[in-house]
Length: 127
Image 1: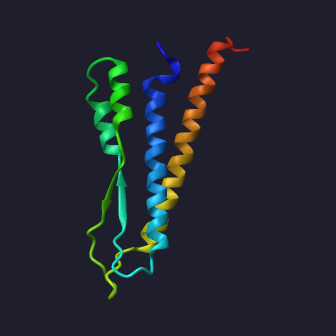
Image 2: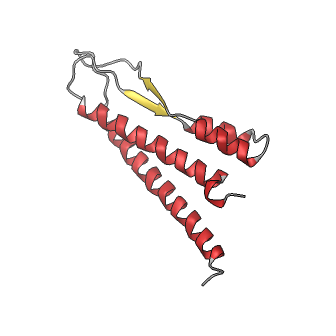
Image 3: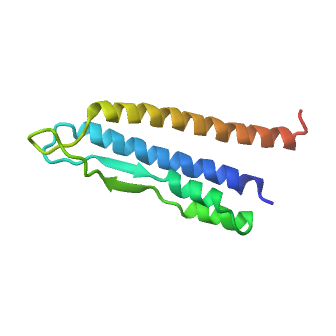
């Protein structure tokens, strides 16, 4: 068994990738706040990862391969604009999403660090 390429590590890595993509899109939305006709973008990936974990079938190496194949989906928002220029970026919502994404990113990074700390502890027999 490859401890460095297991389901947990790959799931956390994929989560970090998706959160990083989301953070970039939120930053793009904020920077285009004054761009006429700009439509905000949303990133989704969690539901696909959750469905993989809920429907575990096969070996852990097959699940690891499926996790690696997950790609964040970027969708253009079709929310109505309340502005005359057609821009639908809501700065308050974007700031809340950015804060939530940063917290989730920090948490996932911490979990990955803890995962490797536990492996190091086991390998060194607690020394």
